[in-house]
Length: 265
Image (cartoon, rainbow, N blue to C red; front, side, top):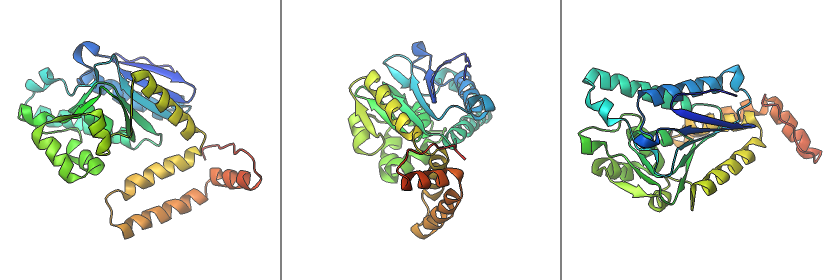
């Protein structure tokens, strides 16, 4: 997939698409143009031209920031109605990103604050460098998280920890984020992080695309449900998986002790 965007750089190596938010002078802050470009990227991935993409990495340019939040200069000029509309646009995008049938990994270097952390939370999981810092500082500006932070952070780390982070506006280093389960792994350098994320994507790409998509939808659909209801969601999804072409290919290859050649159907 070959596309160009005003505030993003895109590198596609085979089935892996790496998206870099490219506003280093503004610490990769998420202004309206970045959001528009991210929305267009997701639309491009969902198009026929993006069919070869099997996994996505999102990171920020430079070493200082993944994304240091929303563009405060823009927010300062917004009316309440405009702020709500801005929130709706970003929530719509993060929900679209979250429901992609592909694995999406946030690779956080430097600051992931405010909207930057909310963008990372919409990804399937987060890798970080040692210099990464995470937080939702909106209360320091008289605001609250508006891009999904009050919903997704409690789901990731529990309501008590999320409330402490949101109420105080405190930001935390990568190792603390790892300790509370916000981050999956921490790496010494950005290159190490991106190499590890790409290796994880290659590992996932060797599996059935249909099964990975089904698993993602099932985990998300069952999240927060009582156990009995979640098991019903899983039961139905397991039945759908059993009816796919990939399931027939995978089970037959296992019995024959061969490598499966999945079709994604």
